[in-house]
Structure formats: structure tokens, C-alpha cells
Length: 595
Ligand code: F6R
Image: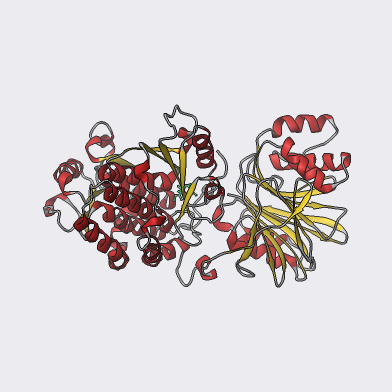
């Protein structure tokens, strides 16, 4: 969602902050803005639309050495210049990620105290509240500490005080912030890519901590006392946040899968002690959102099938409010690329409150879910920039697959011979994916691109993979797409199938292949364009499909990782043939930090 960057150093701050904002564009935004000290005053420039619109209206003569910037993804009030950040009230100027839940009552209170508001945002209320507290209590650290009592919800805030030209204050609750020293000066940002051009070392601000960033140094405070913090290092290539010649980040990230999977297997499959022992639990709940939820559906299937354990998978925004039968014999697995998804965090906290053990499967190191889970498995995907996840999803599935593999071995469901065969198959995955990436997907994509809607069908594991294939297609190509268990389509939805409606069917499981094939025939009889994605062992007669993509025949535990790749490629080429902004689909944000 929104992005934050602040710079305090010796260079011209404007290009540094603008570049930082561009590196955070992937998070999704609809307006941007910047604030800096100029002629002893704070100057705020902001605009609706792309960062290039903001660049056009910044005075080229201004050369400040301190600035804060923001990309906004609208929550309170429509995308507009007035609602964009930064917001200034009295002596205070702020940029904000997150949501102030009690802003309406605070606003009323502040209006009664004489404050006037220009925008519809919760952020302007937070700025006014800081200004008010600062008038009352002159000590800035005390004011910021008091904020925790006053503001409900989540926030990452950078704050400028008009009477202190050389300082950026930063505070967070719920939304992440990192702080970094570099040769050109000090930086504060909501996410790693914004600092990678200057340094790989950073401090992670924890809840309730305050960072005070001057040109010379960075000081951290907690409960009025200065504290020392551990310096962390971003372990991946700075290049992993660059396009490296690919037309889009999404394509680059799809092509990165063989490499990240190989690294992952070298790390985890070689050292299975790093994979938790799930046989210690009576049941498993998997909780996540979006694609991470789809990865969870696969884990759910594999746990039951190979681990013989009661497993269920839930959408986090439902899980946190529904009745859940969990206790200390339950393991709750939270899957999240960002580790900052609001509903997944809330589910994690609920699970802990009820006494369950928690396992986070997370990409972003040091994120909230990683820090608060009892155990964490890092998927080590590196930066994922495209809003539509690909490599992180695949590694989430691989992680769940390895958990099921270990569980199967521990419970005696996977014997030594099968265990060895599977191990070889896992190690062969990068090569299999490289082969699949060589296929020509454009010829199928142009057929699908002409349609208004598409359907994905499959049974059991194939259905779970269809869910992700369908989401990939709709989120970047804006073609309406639905997934159905293949046998379910005829109970109503088949009425939507007409001439040339794409039906994409996945068949990798021989025991239910014939059933799915019958369902494909039903759609073809109604004029559908049928594209079958199947394993080589499954035979289908030519008269039931228009096109077919074949992949290697592998055990479920391994094929569940491979099968998605053609669907990612298909979605990418459909969207590309339609000329869409693939890395930043409309209305979407990379990290969903609001409920
Ligand atoms: C879709 C996509 C989203 C995320 C979802 C959860 O391509 O990326 O559906 O999977 O928003 O995000 P994380 O994994 O960060 O919790």
C-alpha cells in the first residue's frame, strides 16, 4: 500500500526521495507528495496520479538536504491533491502509512479545540493531534510516546517539526519502517527497495520505538530512554529489486523461480531440521489472504493426503471473526509474503491468545508475522516487486510441500524408497521449470485476451492450482475469471459458457482425470475454447480440446509447485498482449496493511 521515504544528508534530497518513491511504486498508489525545508519553512508539494506528475510541479531551483516523501493508496477520501500526503497542521508535517481507526472522534474533539481540516483523511487528523500535543507538552519525544495512547489503529509516521530544521522523527505501530545510514546520509523508509541504491544495512524500527534522524546520526528511543539497536543486512542482490532487462518485474520474477527454488532446496532440503515437525499437533489450521491462501489450499491438501492429519485452510479476514476450535494441540500456520497483511496478523494474534502454536511462512525478514510467530520459515524469495505474486507463491507452496514430506516420513506414510525419489524430484524442479518456461504461451494468450470472461476448472489439487491461475489472470488482465471444482460447473455456472469462452482445465491426477475430462466435454459441447494443462501420462483425445500444454508427470508433492508456472506465463502474456501496466494493476497494492 502506501510508501514512505525520508532523507537527511548532504546531497540534494529531492532526487533521492523521488527515486525512493519510484522504487516503492510497486506497492500500489494513486498520488504522491514531498515535503522539505526551504527558506526556513516547510514546503509541501503533492499531486494526484503518477510520480511523474509530482516531478512536473516541484520547483527545480529548490535544493533541500532533508525531505520526506509519500505514495498514497487511497483509503479515507478519494485520490486527490488535497487528500495526498504530506499533511501539514500548525507546526507539524507528516506522511503516514496505515489507518487511524478512531480518527472521526479525534477530529470532532480537535474541531472543538479550533482545528480546521482541509482533507477527508485520517492522516490530517493525526497531524493535528501531534500539533495539539506539542503545544501542550513541548518535549517532542514525550509527544510521540503519548501518541500510542491516543491513536488507535496502525501507523508508520515520519514527522517534521517546523521549529527543528535538521530532524526527521519516525514512529510506528502496525506498519513497518526501516532506518539506514549510508555514505550519502541517513534514510527512513517503509520498505527495503527504497534504500538499496545506497546501503544494504538497516535498522528495523520496533513497535513503540522512536527514531530521531539527523544529518550526522540516528538515535533510537523507547519509553524516554535511548536504546541500542541491532544492525541488519539485506542478504539478497541489490539487483533483485531491478528489472534486469525484462519488460516487467512480473516476468523477471517468473523467470527467477528456478534459481530461488534451487537456493531454497539447497538450504532446507539439505537440512530438514529447519522444517518443523508437524506430527506434534493434532490439527493444523492454515490462514492467509489472496495467493498465500491459495498456497494454503495446496498445503491443506498435501497435509491430509501425505501427513494424515486434520488440516483446514481459511481466509484470514474470515478466520479472525469466526468461531475457531483451536487449543494448544493446534498449529496455526500463517502464510504471508510481506509479513504485514493486517488480517493475517490479526489471525496470528488471535491464535496465540487462544493458546495455539503458530508458524509463520514469510518472505520479508523481520516483518511483523515473522517476529510474532512462535516459529518462522523464511522462504527467501528476495524482493518481489510485481504486485501479482509469482515466485513468493511458488516458494510458499514448496515450503508447505516440504512440511508435508517431512510429516509423511515421520508418520511412516512415505517410505524410504519414495522419500528418495521425491528428494530427487524436488532437486530436479528448477530444470523442469526452465523447460516449461521455454514453451510459447503467446499463441494461447491472444485467444484468451479476446474474451470478457474465463473459467478455470480442476479437481482436488488441480482445483487449488486453478484458484491461483485464475487470480493471476484476472488481477493483471482485468478479464473476469472464475474457478470451479470441475464437477461443480454444471450446477449453475455452465449457463455462462458460450461460443469461445475460454475454459482452462488442469489435469495432473490420474485418479480423477476421466472425471475432469467429462466436465471439459460438457463445456466444449457449449462452444467453449478449451485449453488443457495436463501431465504427460494423462491421455486425452484430440476432439476434446483446442489447445494443450503438457508438463512432466511428477508426484503431487512436487507437481503442485510446477503446475502453476504455465498459468503464470499465460496470465502474463494475456495482460501483455492487452498492453496493461502489469506490475501495477489498477486498484491493487502489494502489501495490504488495512482490514
Ligand atoms: C496476488 C497477491 C495477493 C497476496 C495477498 C497476501 O497476486 O499477491 O493476493 O497474495 O494480498 O499478501 P501477503 O502474502 O503479503 O500476506
